[in-house]
Length: 491
Image (cartoon, rainbow, N blue to C red; front, side, top):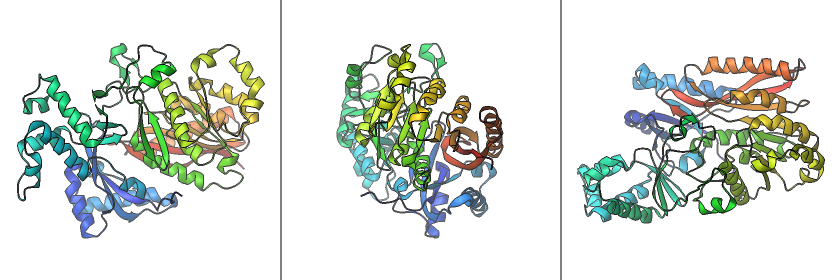
């Protein structure tokens, strides 16, 4: 039996240069959560640390005001400059999130250093353990150039910039690929993995393809170092090619996710939003509770949020996703999670008579209790037409997720047309914004949804901005937010 998550606690997300000041402040007051772990990440623009605390976060609409007020108070107490204060983020996290960090835990750090020692012959661990000793130059190089990793079985994914040319110059093996491979082998053995790669930010445009937009958000810059990741020679992978590729897994909130790291984006930073979404769904009551409702995810990926809807018990979850690798990951993840899924490939969807067959067969195909998730490998611009056919055969659509970054605006008119026209529902709008601009952006989004509701539904419905949540840091002073728009009766 899974235990219910404890009440959220405050977490500080600060630049590495401020770790000591915040840690000392919390320790003096007994508010540092020692059951968790301070961990660092490179978000592609800067290195930041996540510091868990024991400070509870109030429920309801006061949460954002509480966090903002605490941030301002801390700025005065710690004497932060305005630029330092702007670089600090306060967020609410669950106990599970704070305890499960895998970024260079102490045993992992020792395993990594031990691998370097066995490979190089330099007594790194002895230097590391000797009282009063400063880290040796080789040790500093190791920790600087392979600073953090996450294990997604069976792969260890290192932070961007790890294992660059300076490392090989340090050990004078920059031209010896065999010796480099031997190090990777020892690291893989130490970390109990079979594959190693170095992460990289998702590119908005793919230079290798002439600068075309990376609509499918493929991780084209990830760098495999060790192990057979597989190779695909066609644009439309077959089931045999899927089976030849490396697939990795992660698990949070009792939900497994599966993806091919060379072809599919994965965002670990969505944990907080998943917690909020699950909490929201678990609090819904009749007649809106999940078994009587349908959810739609217009940018489903490998099932980040679609699986949350399924776990909460939604009767149906309709998904749209362009990337065939993501759809396959969703299928594999569903199998692990024991969600019944039906996928529709782009060739099947492109058939001229598919819509007619869809209309003719909805009663037999979509009313099956086992078919909880329906995944369409196509542009979400087709979603309204599909939903129009399906609506009479599925429970009311009460949730629509618009999860594309940096903005999901092209999907907003679709979401308004898809949400149930009688009962209404919630539209979860994801976007990036600067901390200083989010209030204005929230008002702008709300006004646009007012117009869309009037245009597509009419005066009997209205749009209301129900909540605003900060998900994660995206770049310096830029954050991923989710605005929850409630579309419902004006009366």
